[in-house]
Length: 365
View 1: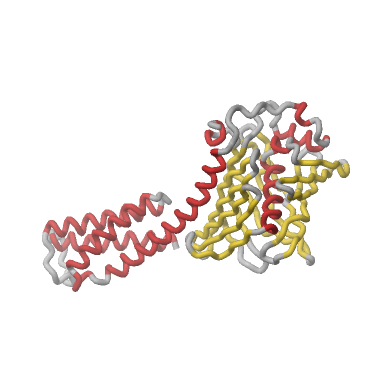
View 2: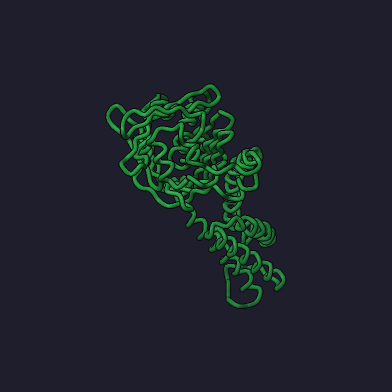
């Protein structure tokens, strides 16, 4: 759909050059019966250039396309009205461009909700240095968890106040086609929050979704073009479900944040640890399975609800590989799995591209 719209903008711009060519006698255009003056011809050329620029900026995913498209539509429609007999069908193309502008505005407004929440959470991050994570900070933790944090490279580095994560991958539902997605996520640790904004690609168009966990309350909101609500879940079940997801992120992407008194630990055996995370009188638990290299190989919890099925199911995130992120050894690829009665179902595959703790967003607080 994006390619089709780019072509529409370019073709619409090309058609406007006919008015310029007619005005300056550059071509015989019998289909244009009206006389076009040279000043009017320059306006037709300008409108065409606006649409060409809109097509170029749209293809490069720059928001500047909206500015040129809007200018092109306004100028184009004025010229069409003046030459209605010959040019009236251009109104259809202008209408399609206006529709795209409205839908783009909807996406922008929806993403703005996420950006405002990120700004609000950033504003309440404690000011001043957070201190250096020391070996002594790990003493209350089980040996497996200590080894994992040590192996990640977190010792001797500032304790993180939050993190920014960029990832992509694909997701699906039971009996539904998979779709690719990109995501940018901010998580905050002192006052726990997880702000996950995803852009899925369905039927050639972008469908944004926002998973918001803030102040102990969670909302899952997916909207077509940021305007038409497709999925919406909130309430106590979602609060607990997103707390599991938040804790899962801590375990896999922020090992230093596991030195937290809100987490209680129990070593089950030589490769498994049970953890319980409590926040705002809500507790969730998970079993962390480690490999011989002191890496988390899987995270398993029975406290998460599959909202599509409206039932609690075993949830796991098997890890496929680790990578280097700013000198830290952290998860790079993994899956999200529901354990159905008939067997496991992988509903998400994730490739983490960036994990950052020490960015200006947190350093300034």
